[in-house]
Length: 123
Image (cartoon, rainbow, N blue to C red):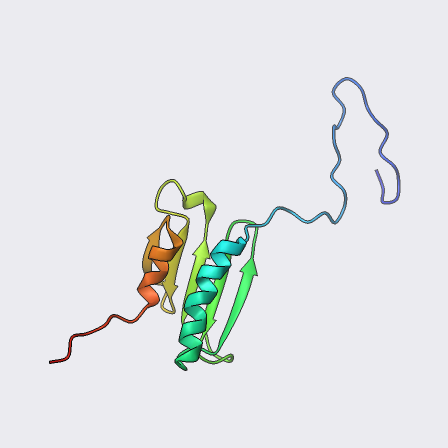
């Protein structure tokens, strides 16, 4: 069938449903609660002057929130959501600039805890 022609319904083992050209495939995204958790940590770090920029990527298999110290650099950290890993290792991961997975799990708040500064006792 060429472009512009209308698909005729077929009976008995035809092609079936033809997808609409240009239809966007399903994407993995962060929902409102997930973004709230991520932006809560991000906002605190921006207020402290450590981070300055971010980017969000939505792909077919994974959603990524990238955190930058400066816009022109590589991202310091990536917060990734990969639903395929939800039953095995957990859907969420924090990945360092070097590619090292700092923490992975099913609870986003606990995974983001790796980005928080640890308080030290000063005597």
